[in-house]
Length: 316
Image (cartoon, rainbow, N blue to C red; front, side, top):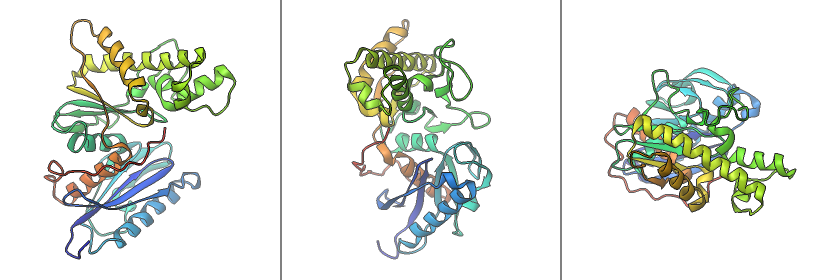
């Protein structure tokens, strides 16, 4: 990187790890690193770890970053991390996350990933679609007119808590029969473990198994997803649905049965096409880079980028 290079610091903050990088104005990822998220040490330690990581990344580049973009979980505005249950923070100003005197912008982690898929990935050129990453939990990014839509108060996209089976199992959120309780990667493994008595079973093992109990658990997950996606389709009429996250690595084992059931449920209209996400684990960090350039006054950047996506496997 030359001293005249222009770049932003981009950071995707998760409950387990943080992925950060430097991204220039052509979309090239100049540097990419991971660090653990010290969640067990409390919210102040997490904020301090983010500051330290951003400072380290900035010092690794030639010159001074134009801005900082952060993708964080929970309820968030562009300038404040309002609340994150799994990280413990509340009302943290964006400037508290960075030691740098540069513009900074925050974004919700899933919506930021959806922004990246919209501008750079599977949804490039598609104005209205749903980005649905399925991992430990399930949340959606509603892309409306090319931008993530958070709703009136920032809670938009919580499709994981649509009650697909109203008389079903209780969710950790307190409701009953939530999509996340049946179709997240964590829930698929948990539900099979409870039925089989085998501890620590992962979702990919359930998908690959011919055990009747595994088949039943997987069928419940597919059914729950088809119900939720039919509801979403009828409400917002998306051009397409993009499935990402660890469980989407099941490929045709997930996409084919969900597509078939979605078509059957939408009796009077066509079902939107289902596509796998294109950016994988890089989606949040690349979306954060777009936020960083927006903070720096360059909202025009992104559409012309050609992104070299990492081959790093997704973790369910």
